[in-house]
Length: 119
Length: 116
Image (cartoon, rainbow over all chains, first blue to last red; front, side):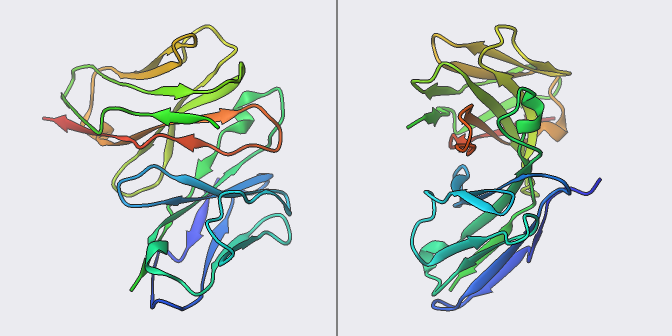
């Protein structure tokens, strides 16, 4: 089946602009995650949804960052008033389930990412 | 908070040889998951192998195997018969078993180069 998809793949924004990044998880996956990956670094957790509920947003760096998943499938990460330090690759991942005895369901599958460049 | 350390920023190996990538982690939990992910230049992160901490047997997936030393909090990845397609960034990651705390904590990665 189709994997996790993200759009746009590349986004150039002027400082101060708002941007919206979209994630389409694998069909049927309950959990959805957003990560930020700076150049040359490992991904860092931003936020996590289980269905439409945002269970953890502890990684969002400021109140300019907002994420939603209103119907429990597609998710949007919005960044308001972008700053140069927001330039990074934003990765989305989904997993089938969580908190189950079957470990394989915990595996997170990643999308190709959106590369954001703020000028 | 858990931390993951990859002390080798870059590694290289001759094609068909074996290479081991190191990972250590810090946690106070007794049960958790550990992962190795591969990120080729196209940037799609791909799961290579996973290990449940409660399993004593080391995980293997074809040419990929791990050496999981729970007491030492070490989780190294061994790639046998290295192939050109193995060239990528490799990230070690940790995940708690706690429900509602599903995030992955990644190391800084190791760039693996395969020498033809």
